[in-house]
Amino acid sequence: MRRIAYFLAWGIVALVLGVGSAWWGVKKSPLNSQTIQVGAWEGSTLAGSLDADMYTRARIAVSALLALSRAETMYFIARFDDAGKALRSRCTYRISGVPPKARWWSITAYADDMFLFDAANAHYSLNGTTAKLDANGQFEFTTGAQEQVGSYWIPTPGDRGLVLTLRLYNPEPTLQNNPASLQAPTIVALGDCQP
Image (cartoon, rainbow, N blue to C red):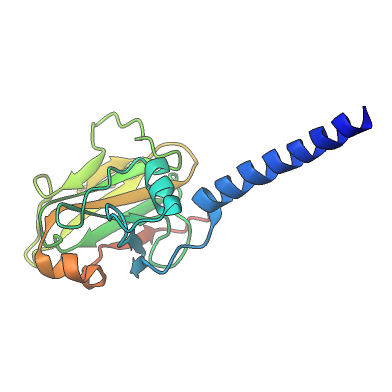
């Protein structure tokens, strides 16, 4: 009986360690050397690559991204604003920049569970088709619980984490070869919003 209890205890310890290490590897482990940071945005040069390790593939699967090759699609994710503060749905942010050098692009706002927010105005993202450029060739939009008059607004109701995803479809070869050359959109908090 003691032998069964001994093996059962070690079996439980092994199961907890195995599941715990897998969870940590996918959700919490430090990013590998193939991750690039451009402003508040981060991307992986291994996404969609045959060289991607099992943890990179798992992270991409958990993040709900379809990982195509860099020639087809590049992905950048922002979980922090330009000041380094965690993005929150209740806060208002201005996202602005020049259109990325790609055939088509979009920036989508997700809740921290990687599902879209309930948007009564049906604005979930801004893209190369819906973006209005100013005299300097820049786009601008806001996210937050409250609409900002005069701005393209993506509603992010509630009080939870916010994740912005920048997708580039058929990026120009110079960007494919050097993802760090992206002119990353800025993410600036409007007003005083504590995380």
